[in-house]
Length: 368
Image 1: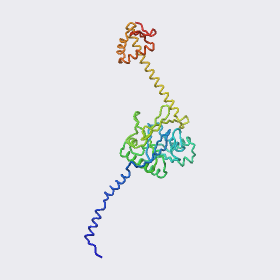
Image 2: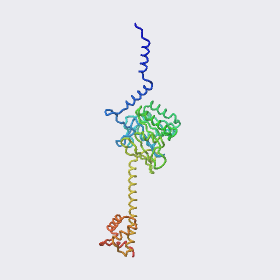
Image 3: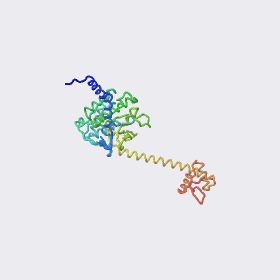
Image 4: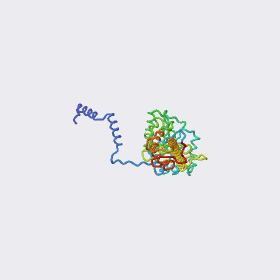
């Protein structure tokens, strides 16, 4: 056998080495492959969103996505979570209906002590016909107030991997970061939660307070900003002086959930308050209309008094165009509204018009 020429062999080894992609080129190729796999084309088939809950046929809290629940302090956010959890367990609670079959719910509370968190299950037991065994099989409730922000995300991930819930409630997302104004930490947290949602196909609902200013409904800090940007939907709680908690959906990528209402009754239990809210809103509209009518009547009375004084100063009779001009000066109004006012007073019998002359009605005429 002919011996291989050492120079030829060396050249072949060099050529093979040159042809081999570098680690940087391999990483770039892998990155490109991952990006190309994400491309959406005209033939791409995307699964329809599956919602955890619905109100009047409109779904909310889609699986595989993160969501927000916001409100001022003590406006009933935790109560809303109880209603949602109860609906998931028993099929429907008030107008909130489950869109899942016997789902598993993970409920994490980072704000309250264990004895207070236990009241969540007590309330759900009172609200639903579910047995203790069924509740314990489908609701996993954990008080995590003693946990530090630097372990909460890992704890949450571990519980989701183990329990495999369809819906996760985090009552107290602010405790997952050192500061809700830390932009980097906030973005990393929301990114990690999104990854968990997509990986496990669950909905993660995050409770976060609104800013303290009464006219600012935005969620607090950079954490709230990032959550509102990434969330599939954000529900809002507002509590009226009457105690009624209204739940709306001001931010959603798809159909907005209709508003629903709850309240605590005299025994401290949650009840449906839609009918009471409707009555309350109707009474509010009626009061507003009455106030507007009263204001209109006061304005009309003031203008009529001005007209009666002008007529009296003119000796009891005045040309309409002169009255119009003087009323314009007295009321600082333009000719059109003043002319309409005079016409209305004539029609109502408070002023009398004969030809182009105006007098006051006998019962309203002032001495001159």
